[in-house]
Length: 407
Image (cartoon, rainbow, N blue to C red):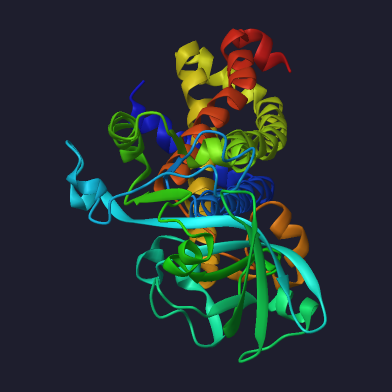
């Protein structure tokens, strides 16, 4: 039997039971739209976790002295030439590198007129910090001018705790490589706010040269390189390992294994969520098709009696389920995309700030709709629709004409 005729028969059969098939079509459409929209939120979380881990002064690749992670002091440091550039390495071009920054990060104590707190003192060159969250901070007052700036910027959370403000003086105490304490007074140039409130209570920033002068050294404790794409990490990692022999050259995944594990798990979460939704939907599809077969047993027996082959019966049932699934998938994808567009710029989740910071997320979650995710939903839905229609279709194929007409 010609395929065109089978499609026509399947299409007309669908319209014979409008209410039942309409409910099934609505269920499929809703499930697909929910999966598409939920996937965009989950992908947004995944992308944000990875970006935040890179933004947290890690870069895609970071160079550290051996033992620095266990003992983050100026004793674990190294020298970097002022004219050093990662895009000067063999096989690394300027379009692969978004930027790089060298820093001096040491534990310290900050003292105001009223309070004392432990913090991380970070000496930076503001001009190179566009590769980290430091370059995106909203600052009340003034930011740092250059690497030689002797002022500091502190987080809003820390400023509140030590009861200081812009223009006030604070004292910083840290330890030099010789084990002796270093102490100096600084003026607060600005107070910054971060999407993650915990960062505001930890980091105090000043000029890199200022910290080196305080510690009486010219070394740095870290060198971060940010790439334009993640896929450039392996070649850069190899080149840096050759140039900085004896130092630890690490990816952001190694520096933040928790964030790396969670981003990897999300790929599995998306598939699990999809199969839960579509698995539940498949039961409804199978039930609907079985009911349709039982109601049309005599009709199919008569068609078999006038010469319709078993495989044609099988194909007709599969075509009917495919038509329903195809319409539901198309409608679900359109609705899912339309629901995504108003929130594409981000959803404000400031009310859950403390919980989000635990997972390395910021207050604004930006959903990410990837074409490959939509294609995956479409393909897997069609496969599930075919599998769900297999049972009633096989039942039709095995039924003899006389047996069917007696029912």
